[in-house]
Image 1 (spheres, rainbow, N blue to C red):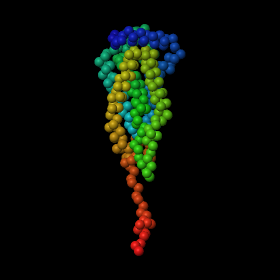
Image 2: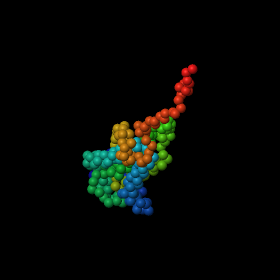
Image 3: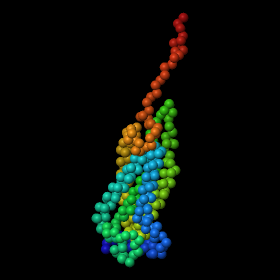
Image 4: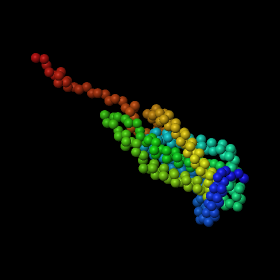
Amino acid sequence: MRVLPPKGLNNSLYLDLNHLSRHTAWAHGFMHGYALWLGPALLAAIFVATYAVAWWRRAPRAAALLILGGIATIVALGANQLVGHAAEELRPYVAHPDALVLVAKADDYSFPSDHSVVAGGLTISVLLVLGSGAWRRRPHARRGLLEDAAKEGIVPMAVRVLAAASAVLGLFLCFARVYVGAHYPGDVVAGYLLAAVAVLAVSLLRPFAYRAVDLVDPAALGNLVRRPGAEPTLGEWAPEPRLRSSVAPESRRRRAP
């Protein structure tokens, strides 16, 4: 019945939250659903909504960064299996058979938590888009007018709200996994941090992702990362033809005496 360190803190916090669970029977139905499927579903919906805002606002680099975050979350889930088999920590209800468990008991390892990996990966992906500068599109010119690059880089308010909601719901999912008796607190913290490290590591590839997006943006494939009908970038603008004046210059209109 192996409990990873800090054993005392893991056991005491787990039992304290289990005691809270016993005295809040009115929340059992909601916490059961949230800890199993509702929490991950809400976080996935926020992630997709953030991508939709980037697509609608014609910010292909922000959309590309979110795609990298989704890939990193999947990678973190795979790494989580390797870490779990290496740690071999048993579920807390094995060490505490009298604990109240609100979900079906699983036979897999407890450390780290898969649900907290999903929470950390999706939340950090959305938060990373806020301060990345990915909302600034490449400046382009038309008829001699330059687009205001500072205005282009403003993060939409909808994304700020979605990021705040994702952070709150993600942390609450981690709390819910301990509340229902499925994990130790250290399990959810480790899963969240594992996903965060994976997202930050994969985000280092964003210069390559930005370059790829800039290449496909003018093509039909660019519709995957920006709404069709977007203003073309600098490379797409063809120089406007100069009209020949029908009136000769003043110097040419003068006749020699």
